[in-house]
Image 1 (tube, rainbow, N blue to C red):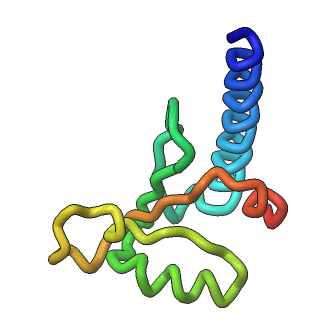
Image 2: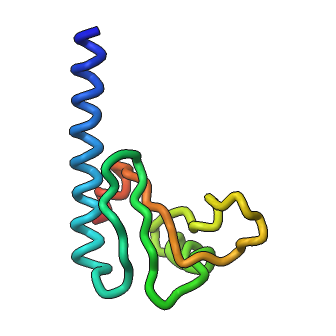
Amino acid sequence: MEGFKAHTEKISRYYKSQRDTIILALQKHMADLATWRVPEAGIYVWVKIINIDDTVKLTKLAMLNGVAFVPGNAFSADESIVNSSFFKIGILAQFLKIV
């Protein structure tokens, strides 16, 4: 059990470091464009874009520039919601290499 506990503590520190790097990148590049909350747990950061209500279109544009995120409507149980000002950034090492 000690090995498992040590492993989970190591992973937790790693994800916290990744999350902190994403938050710093958001603060540096999107402070005037978006709002977000620093998650206490999980592997995603929810971001709300100011004055944009369709992150699906934004996702397509971002992918053309080598940036990937998931538009917020993909996480809605209500299938009638097609536009959203939110998106999720996964805490991924590949993202951090771009930042």
